[in-house]
Image (cartoon, rainbow, N blue to C red):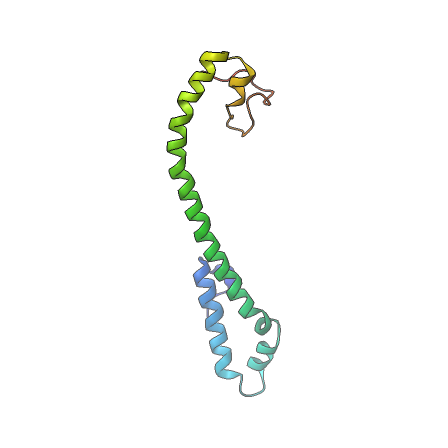
Length: 124
């Protein structure tokens, strides 16, 4: 019998554990008794949907990973174009102008014009 689902380290391990339990129950559910009771109970009703939900979570995790990688790849090119733009704005309007501060995002995620802790960005 597999360990509990909470002790399974990966989603694939969880799916395999549920399938193993279903297989064990399937071998013993011909005669009335414990296996038939479990298959007709909450576990039997929810096992198939749990496997489907975990499989969907695995698929969406892969999709998210692909999106994160694509964003990381695009960041380098975008940042290279951002730096000259930032320099032009600073040269045109000055380092303390609202236009220049608007194009800076602080580490806390706030725009520097909205950040009460610092009125001017650090020069780059």
